[in-house]
Image (cartoon, rainbow, N blue to C red; front, side, top):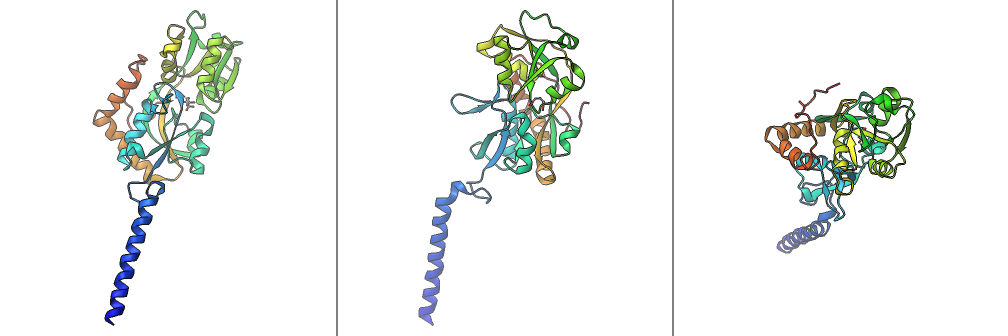
Length: 279
Ligand code: GLU
């Protein structure tokens, strides 16, 4: 009897030791538990200076990156527990539906069409569609675009708005990212680039483009940026909305605005109210 007890106790000790070893070696891979090894995958843009940019050093910068980092912290993830994933404009709904990412903070406008497929927390920024032009361009209004070569991105509201209302007769080229459009504007392959003023201001302020481009300043649409979550994930949605509210009320939102939009002199709108869209 005595012997059996000792054996049982040893077995427990052994089992604990094995578990501890397993935990130790598996720590970093663990995606689900509440240990320090958990991670969150967040979709951002990689090529939009001031919003979502992968720096040559491999680090990430921009307003969306700062908003997502703040939200992730409220959800219980430290910055080094975030795994950034590039989500291009046309890939965003699918990336959320497939579960490739938990959140998307990628200049992602809340629209009725997208709401059929994903849910949105926010809005956390109001931007407006505009045009980026060469400094000496004589384009100054939307009707000047008819017959002109224009560039935007597949799957964006910017491209959709051009087709639907802003300039259906423009010759619209669609690339997969705005950095390709900017290169086409610089080379003269297109006459204008169209998307949100927040994005265009970031490109125009880059050292390599300084003095070459101008924004038309047209406010062609209202773009309410939301954080995309998987359709039906109400628990995450509510947590993200609370985090965004806190980010505004504790001053972190304004700090992120100053840090990321200041250098481009982008004059953003005031912080939106959660759940209130400007149509
Ligand atoms: N905010 C617009 C959109 O969600 C344009 C910017 C983008 O393509 O990310 O489509």
